[in-house]
Length: 104
Image (cartoon, rainbow, N blue to C red):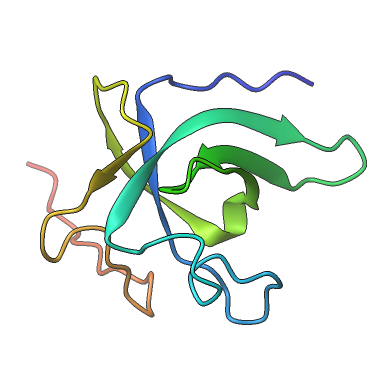
């Protein structure tokens, strides 16, 4: 199976609390940064993808897509970038309200 990856993709971390090692609580990743996706690995026996990212210690990690959120598509060669205040934050709910417009 082949996965196409946009080379401009940056992600922020939003890990579930039960993961070990925990990338944020264990101090390996800083939630104030977005990280460039260097690659993707998909194990053929599962539907889970692992994104390859480098932290501020220049360590490469494989992190499940369940713990990542898309940030932006950027033209940058930096491995990580500092988020602006309030960016990259996720909310508990992913629900949204759809508006139905009349057909005219």
